[in-house]
Amino acid sequence: MLMKICYVSNNFEIHDYRFLVKLIENNYDVHAVSFRKNKIPDKYFVDKIKYYEYYKIHTFLTKRYKGLNPFWYYNALKFLKRIIIEIKPDILHGGYTSISGFICALSGSHPFLLMPWGSDILIDPKRFFGNKLLTSYSIRNSDLITCDITIVKDEIVDKYDYDPDKIIVFPWGIDLNKFNPQNNETPDELIEWKNNTIIICTRQHRKIYANEYIIEAIPNILKENNSIRFLFIGSGPLTEKYLKKVNKLKIEEYVKFIPWIDNEKLPLYLSNSDINVSASLSDGSSLCLMEALACGLPSIVSDIKSNRIWIKNGYNGYLCKVKNSRDISEKILCLINNKKKFSKMKTKAINTSKKEADWNKNFSKLEKTYQILLK
Image (tube, rainbow, N blue to C red; front, side, top):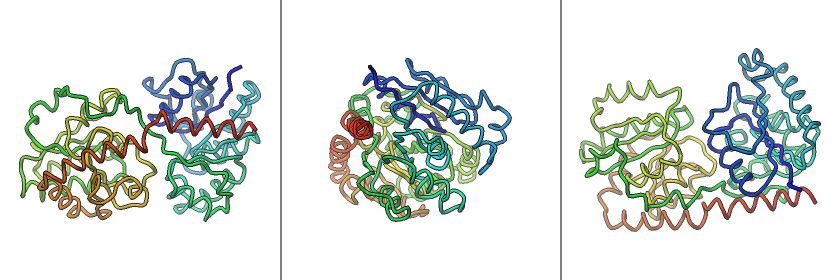
């Protein structure tokens, strides 16, 4: 009989999709509960999974859910409890900690595996005391916790006095058969840039990813080398602001924005680029970074704790000062002007991904976690 997993999340975007695909590939009976404010995008649905979408049941509450709305939580709990009674899962697997994780904890269903996403532990509890209370409750009522990076584990142990032996850490990982340097086809959008050095950023256009500092670095880079081009793949609430900034700086001919690319095609754009850059203010183990490394891109990323685990200065990339466009431009130029070091970094980037980011290997740690919970 297949192990039955009730997988609960309030995201259901690419990260959840990867988990769900892997669970189905490994013959789990998966029931997915969504607390999104709206429909799960079609591209993130996985065959053979039964979905339960809260927004369909409580449209009024879902659309008006703002922050800590007790009525939303109360009805969400009733929704989840009905599902748990109906399917009788072997394991309840839930996160984001202060929303889906909290509802899972309230349900009283065990065994319960809590899966923090990073910012729900590192950022949200510091913004609002209510979030810290919800986070604390979720952690205390979990049977085990899995997270993708040691800094999240350390925060849970230090701030919530949780048993470190009950936290399993593994990077979520990527498909190395898909993300590798062997993608030789050139996308149509990049044909005119074939002879240029291309800097790529694949972070969403949200405040936490601070893409504006990359844009502000571009004029300084072009003063030294105007053969460099900049590719931003992604979208978000700040897209219009970024486009206006590019126009204001008069660098339109050097920059392209591509709103969204299917993950299956993303390796083509990475393999046709030369350097990956991210100015993120906070991160777990960034899948965007893993994907870039796997495609052989040295990476210039913000000097935050999570990035220090993946990027070693001068080895497979550079760490740059947070919120510092000048440092970003200096690190990019330093790398471009040293072709010998650049070539070595490409090889080391690939080696890093093979050693640490193989999703096939890393997923086995989740399966071992499930087995521990059942025992």
